[in-house]
Length: 144
View 1 (cartoon, one colour):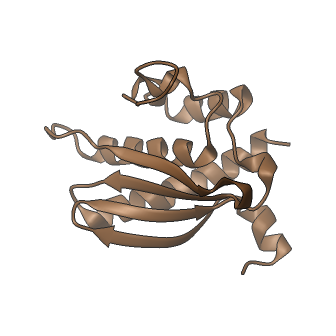
View 2 (cartoon, one colour; view 1 turned 180 degrees about the vertical axis):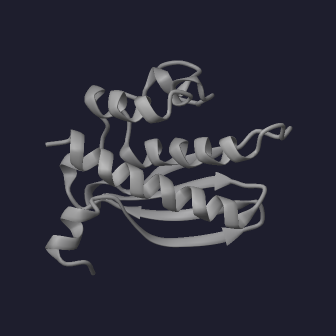
């Protein structure tokens, strides 16, 4: 269990990653409630580096794109789309789209499960790690 200083440095923590056939299953923990959902400020900050995110296809209650919910969705859902974006950048010309899902395992405890497809497991692991690092910076910058 991380100490308080480590949690402050990494509000979004990956507790486990399982590589399955064609997908990563990632258990994510967000101890502090204030870091569990996106805001317009966080969405704008992330959008500066990842301008493709609003255009991602996304099954949600507001519309057909991630941009329809990016300002008010779970932080793990944002992590899913960041990891997919990073994989997409590396897979120019690939035919099959990357897909993912995010669900709260225990929202009250800040525990979620993010699943993303991949073509190369090492590339997916790198993308998920990079996405998590960036998201921690973004969250600490934008969410008071």
